[in-house]
Amino acid sequence: MLKKYSFGLSIQNEKMKFEDLNLNPSILKALKDENYTEPTSIQAKAIPLVLAGSDVLGSAQTGTGKTAAFAIPIIQHLLVDQRNLNGKRKTLSLIVTPTRELAIQIGESISTYAKYTNIKNAVIYGGVKQGAQTDELKQGVDVLVATPGRLLDLMNQGYISLQEIKYFVLDEADRMLDMGFIHDIKKILTKLPKKKQSLFFSATMPDNIISLSNDILINPKKVTVNPVSSTAETVKQFLYTTNKSSKTDLLLHILKNPKLEQVLLFSRTKHGANKIARNLERKKIKCAAIHGDRSQNQRQKALTDFKEGKIRVLVATDIAARGIDIDKLRYVVNYDIPNEPETYVHRIGRCGRAGEEGVSISICEPEENAYVRDIEKLINQKIQLVRDNPYPQTDRPMNQAEKKAFEREKQKRKQEHFANRKKNKSNQKKGFRKK
Ligand code: AMP
Image (cartoon, rainbow, N blue to C red; front, side, top):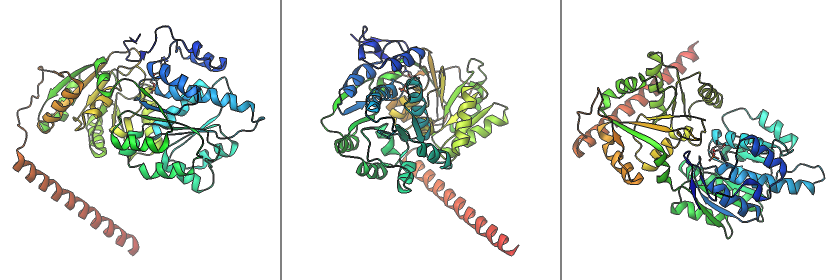
């Protein structure tokens, strides 16, 4: 029987307990500390399969308990393997994930579930100096959690060998391909031993993902939970329609509501994220931006400050925010409407986790009206329009001719901007040389 809990983690079988899964008592003790009483749907389905040694093709996104679904049985396998290693440490497990934030979170989860064992994990990601990571590797680790670029880099430098890997996880495969990691992944695959257990997770399963999974998995067992459109059910969704020019004013109006104590705000672009953060700072609203152009340390600090309540608004791009798990986050604001409806579902899935009711507020300019219609089709419900809006939409979307002219003008301005930047840089260089 499928029981659906208010926090969106569906439990597969009411009677199933972690105790029924024949897990090592040290893992059970750690799960108890975390107050995990029952496995989530993906855990109930995947853990027995992974324990039995099957390859698994998992269709699941973050927020479903996916990390524990692969981490717990891998820890269990490693505890058994350790008995035969006579105290030696070998890297037997590799988990590859697209973003630094996800890698760090997975590493933290493994440390939590393995805290009463001597299983050691290391997290390898780019954007920071490699020294601390290579020092850790030299001491030996059982589980390696890595983003593709830094992993290949350290493999090329001879710090990492994948020859002994027995358990391989490819996490968030769809995002991995979106981020252009396909060649890196293929290179990594060639370095892995043929005989291994592979687990492959993706939120969506388009053809290119299925084809990649065929390269990796042998007779996989399929596990599916929460199709992407259904997570929207647990979040209350509101929509403000406005003009492009009044978005900032509308956002400030929305943030006047003291109920919005902490907000994760999405921006489609890095440039947009910086601009929104600057505008909020001007109005003395404590905020920080996270995106790919910010250093790892800046991103981690922003996230920590947000989790500790030191900042009210965290402005993020989709890639930077993917997989971020912020306990008790209630409000997500979409400063723009994503053109891919699945992205909207991922965004609003950031709030309303772990028992808290989530609220999403979307701000839509005329050019985005069509995107709202696509989203409503996907989630099979209407997003509630907020009528009490001091900045209502009065402009109409551009027609084809206007759109073309707008794109031409935008392109022209972009070229001018880059030409000026180049000119300024070369002038600066010349000035530097004269000195
Ligand atoms: P994930 O999908 O792996 O990002 O997990 C989402 C959240 O669910 C995390 O905060 C986990 O700590 C939590 N979680 C995972 N498994 C369980 C469980 N069985 N019971 C309660 N919470 C869980």
